[in-house]
Length: 179
Image (cartoon, rainbow, N blue to C red; front, top):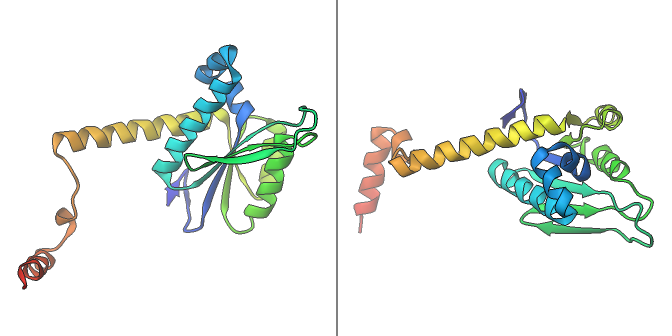
C-alpha cells in the first residue's frame, strides 16, 4: 500500500485522539456545541468510512479519565474500535501504550495536533498526523470515492476483462462453454 510516501506490506493502524480531532475540525466543533455525543458519533462515522475505504484498523480514543468510578470501555462501531479510557487514564496514555506495542510489528499512525503527544508517538516508532492533515486525507478519499461512483454511473467501470490478455479471455470463454 502506498500512502504518504510510505510503502508497506505490513498491517496498518490509525489511532485517533477523539476529542483533539473534534476540537480541531470546524464541523465537529460546531456539532459539539449542541451535543458532544453527536460530535463523537459523527467522528466515528467518518472514521468508519475511511476504514472501509482504506482497509486498515482504526481506533478512536476518548478521554474518560475525569469520570468518577469509570471502568472504561471499548466497543466496535461499524468496524471502528471506540475506546473510552478509564478513570485516571488519559487518551494520551492509552494511545502511547498502543503505539509502544503495535509499532514493533505494524505501521501505526496517530492523528492528534497535540505537539507533545506527537513527539512521544515519534519516539515510540509511530507516525504522527495532525488533525488538519487527517481532515485533508479524509476529504481526498471522499473526492476519490465520488469520482469512482460517477465513473461507474457513466459506465466507465473497470472490469476484469479490460486487464486480461486476449489469450486468457479465449481460455475463459472456452471453459464457460464446456459441458
